[in-house]
Amino acid sequence: MTAGHCFAGEFPPEARALVSYGPNVRAAALYLLHAEHRLLERTAQALSEMLGVPVSTGFVASLAAEAPGALDPFLAEVAERLVASPVVHVDETPDQVPH
Image (cartoon, rainbow, N blue to C red; front, side, top):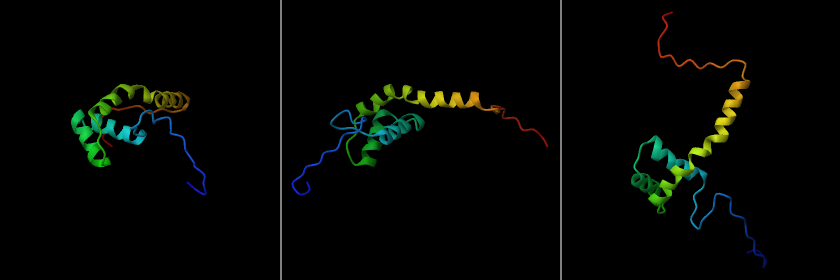
């Protein structure tokens, strides 16, 4: 409150509930869960300890359902850029060629 005026901001679209975590926390949770192969309980516990607030296993589990479609725009752009590129090197052969 400043000089008798009250100012209120708007919540970002990611804030859909009373307790909401932004995209960085959501990404960190998915990283811990899938890239680090942690259990739901251990992922929630790790986030709780890092953030200093309780994080439920239900929140972590809900991310697995929303995550697959989140990469669609990125993958579409990558495909578009690959098609437009004059040269695309995709050889993943692990063999060593003697010089």
